[in-house]
Image (cartoon, rainbow, N blue to C red):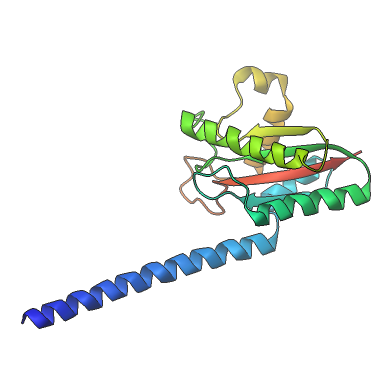
Amino acid sequence: MQLAKLLLGLMVSATLVSCATREEREEAEAKKAAAKAGPSIEAKQVAAEQETSFVTEFAFPKGSAELTEQAKADVRRVISNAKRNGDIDEIKVITWGDSEYPSVHTKKLSKAEIDLVKKRNKAIKDFVKEFSNTDVDSHSMAERPGTITNLLNTEDAKVKKSLEVAGIPTTDTAVKTPSKASKSIIMVITE
C-alpha cells in the first residue's frame, strides 16, 4: 500500500515537473518568436506618427534594467539602419516597468516600478552613448501625464496618447495581450 502511494506521488511530481518545463519552453519560444517578428503594431503606429520607420521593440528580464545581448543587437541595428538613411536627429525611448501602463483610475504605478523604468531608460541611454552622441528622449510608461502636461500637449503626452489609441493594455484592461509590461520601444528619427 505504501509503495503504491509512493509511486503515485512520484508520478504526480513527474507530471507537475513536466508541465512546468513545457510551460517554460512555450514561454521561451513565444519570446523568441516575438523577437523575430519585430516591433508590435502599436510600436509601428507610434513610429509612423513620429514619421520614422526605424523602430525596434524588446523586452527586459522581469525586475532587471540590464539590456540583453539581443536587445543591444536590436538597438545597434536600428541605429545603424537609420544612419544609412541620413543624419540622426534624435532617439526616442518608451519604457514600461513590469506592469502595464496605469489606467486613468490608477494614474501611476508604485515607486519601485517608476524607479525600474528610470533605471531601464538610463541603461538604454548609456548604451546608445557608447556608439552615438545623439540626443535621447525617454518616456516612462509607469506614470500617466498630469493635467498640465495634457493641457500643454507635451511630447510625452502625445506619445502616451498615441499608444493608448493604438490599444496598449492598461492596469484595468482585462485581457493583457499583447502585453507591454517589461518592454521598451526605440525609435530613431532622422533629419
